[in-house]
Length: 266
Ligand SMILES: NC(=O)C1=CN([C@@H]2O[C@H](COP(=O)(O)OP(=O)(O)OC[C@H]3O[C@@H](n4cnc5c(N)ncnc54)[C@H](O)[C@@H]3O)[C@@H](O)[C@H]2O)C=CC1
Ligand SMILES: O=C(O)[C@@H]1CCC=N1
Image (cartoon, rainbow, N blue to C red; front, side):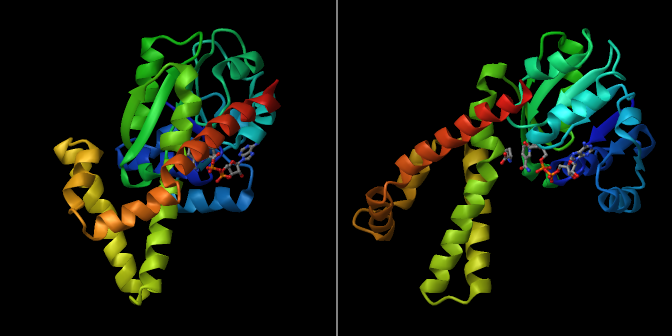
């Protein structure tokens, strides 16, 4: 089964490297990439064939990993080459399967995916949704592609903008918190390397505790929070600064931005 990745930036390379790590024959993969220096880098690093988008569009599965703003141009270019029976998988935030289907021949199946960058270390979270010409076999193909780099869930497409606000953008929120905790540690007088090691291991350990015990986060937080202790003092400050409310408004903004990214396609 040939797979082409069109747009090999951060997320495209993440998928490419995951497929190769997962045992796909690189001879069955190809890349379409606009920037020649990036194309050369990928050819050198992975031994992958880099071709024109119109050639990439002849693969059995064509994965679109360009920015949402570049999606209309790419579809206009490859639309005339696509044939019924092929599968188009889009990883672009906000772009609906309906908008993609409008640019390509009838009978080409479309799957919309929201992945995330922890896929680079095989801990990705991807949500997939079928378009209107998509059957279970197409979904299974998309699932197999994404499961090379982590977990995959199936969701109705109407949930994809909320998914984008959670797991798509989510790694950035957590890195933001990590940055803030490291800076706070430095403020408290710790060397930066010590603060970084403490924060990173605390995040990894807490994530593992959540996943491996399946315990509700509220219970885990209560277990850390001794009456009249240090954690209660800190959480009170976080509540005073409305951190919980800030997450709600931040994620509403991400969801709304995802919805508006589709507007450029009409
Ligand atoms: N970075 C992330 O964490 C996530 C990104 N995504 C989605 O993945 C897509 C790509 O995002 P990134 O990889 O972060 O962006 P990026 O800017 O790193 O990569 C996009 C790549 O597409 C190439 N490109 C642009 N126009 C092209 C064309 N006409 N033909 C061939 N290649 C072309 C660019 O040269 C670039 O290498 C976006 O739609 C984004 O919404 C989804 C989930 C997470
Ligand atoms: O920020 C963005 O638009 C992309 C989609 C989800 C994560 N990064």
